[in-house]
Length: 209
Length: 286
Image (cartoon, rainbow over all chains, first blue to last red):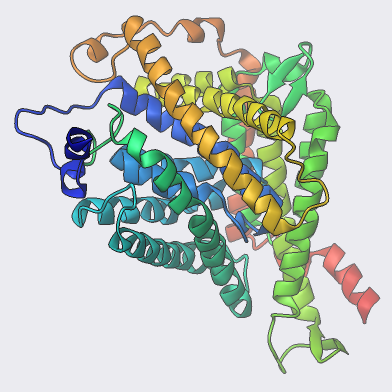
């Protein structure tokens, strides 16, 4: 029992490479990226079709979980997948091609920020302390604000799809849709699967390996 | 029948005579058309053309049903956004005031313009998705020399989306077999249901990633290092060649786009005030 406790990785150890440990980009990372795009495609489309506000914005976007949890676990590969898959899920859900394309920076930020915060502050993806929960929650809020501002003010306003008076509704829709779904899923998924994921070869300690 | 990304199309559909790149080109260029056209009449004509193309391609029109709620909800949101949330504008022409909400002609007109700009873009996307198979997209990407690794990720992503859907069905059946029934339940209950799907879906995908990787490594695939630099034979491309009509289609799409830009910016066509449909509506509501 004592030995088992000793073997359990600390948050610091999760993100640091040990002496002599060599990590490199492998086929598994390419596969993970593809699988994350695949999961996000399906999960994101469900959210977009079930609770639509319009133009790919919805009140409960389940794709956020793939975007943020995937990026925390798989670093840059998760960020790539998180930026790309909404393009496909939105397409299936009836969002115009170029509007979906213009959302990519917003989605990239939403995926990147939690991944960066977990690596920068050496947080535990298994969510062991209050700090892990708090930082995850805050990063979800901040990334969703940035995503909402880009997508609504830059994309939807830029394409002339919204009036100035309806901008707040869409900002709240994007922000709320992401945060609510994130609160429901991100914590549960990280808590349930992180312990397994961090021991797999697919787990990314730095950004690419 | 061929399974496309959005349904099934018969083998004998003429769309399969067209090179997949032409379909991708159509999506990329024709999606731009409504951005330069304000008059809804032209956008409606574009939608009719796309529906005709779908009909000629023998697309099962019932696949369009899933977009009816999307079109209705989008229309409603746009209408509400431009009227209820449209603010007070004394400079506009007030048509009606209902429960304190002002309905201005200019706002209703703008809502219609936006709505009929978005709809053809959606139709173009639906046309592409309902006529393209996974393989067509890969061929289109390979024919414009997209790097192998990108094409491979793309192909695998499309394949894994199908697998996730299958896994989703399995998880759903397993939960139903354990007495989980979401029928007639509240939204909160259905959200809990999503949670119960998500964890096993992720777990299954992680397991699959290992299986995929082992299979790829066993077949000698590598995306980095010396092995990845070996030139690959584009076997799939040998099955597709450009025919004379592919070049004609590409030329027609390009000419149509250039003509659109010339007429729009050179001669001021496709403007709101030239729309006979809006003029008709204007005379009807006044």
